[in-house]
Image (cartoon, rainbow, N blue to C red; front, side):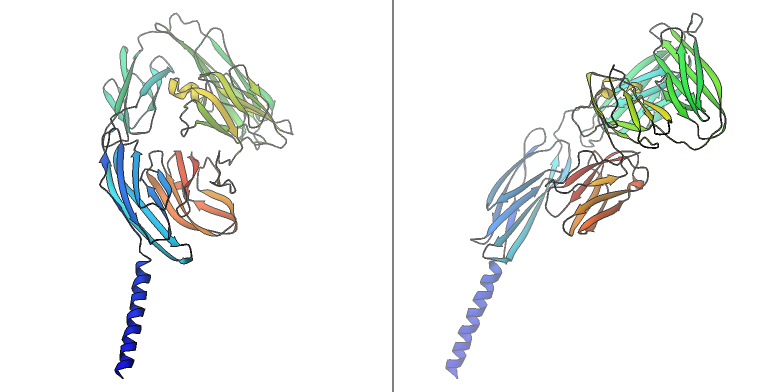
Length: 487
């Protein structure tokens, strides 16, 4: 009996030893040191890792600012050197995962997190500008710009503050010199960055010596389509056409399709201004339309590529409609033109240009549109150096990391909710997150993709107008980033 008990004791000891060894063999560990701060956003961290002998390991590091140091293989000691671009509070997270190459069911995982506070980035790159365009002697259109996203801005006109404004029409009730200033501050709360720009407008000049005269005509091309043309007798530096109160800035001629029957007021305005003279004139006519459905419409939308370090790069979407096939004529206002539906044009000299498109469909319907986005913001910040036009719904330059899956946001630009459309070769979890250009999360949710076609609704209706980034993250893979535009 004693011999049997001894054997049972030894057997239990062996089993216990094996179990302890098995548990220990599945332990991973990683730790991070306290950060060593350098200058201008730089930080150095060391880390120690452990994992079972003979196993393969992988360490990934997320710096909390969108940067990832991935795939550090089979290391027990690491040194991390990272430079942040914006002051703020961040969390650095290190992940270690190891597995037994002889038995992949044996694996372990561990995480370490340390906080980092960056407050020594002192460079302020914020630059503001303000300008105005004269509508009449006492009324001006004020437009201001900042070269980076801001968290606060306002206009000050003769000491009167207009909160959260960067543009407005303003009418002066008194003659004299008027100071117009634009103030903005950046989004860096730990190191505030501000800038102010001011201009003077003098409305004491009068039009007694004004010889500028304008006229406008509206020639019927069909029962509801008119060719509108404004003409001046001398030089001018600002003009626009209004149709039933809708203003088309920076244009002198256009083709317009009226949707409703009746009388429509068509007006043309032009002005000239220099350091000592202001002169303006306007003219209006009535166009009678029989109405009817719009059979064609020239339409496009352009914007500065906010993700490109070259601020003269502009992108656009051609939304023109009509009975196919359509013919296109683009006028880039630099002596160049194109007959392509989706042209790419590089200007010899970056500047402020009016972009015009005229289309004609298979039924002979013709329509024109001009966009003076850059002209209306006459500054170095809004100059066009190149313009690329894309089809509706194009997710511009967007492909997955391996290049095998194309992700599209439709429609893009969006007015209501959009859809994320793609075809997947496998079912997998994916995190979908929208962030603004400052990195702030606007919405985030997880979704299970299916094999084949996927159509995922995005709550873009909740977003304000602007440019955003849509981040698609699968596990520990590098996020796929798409541009998203909300009108």
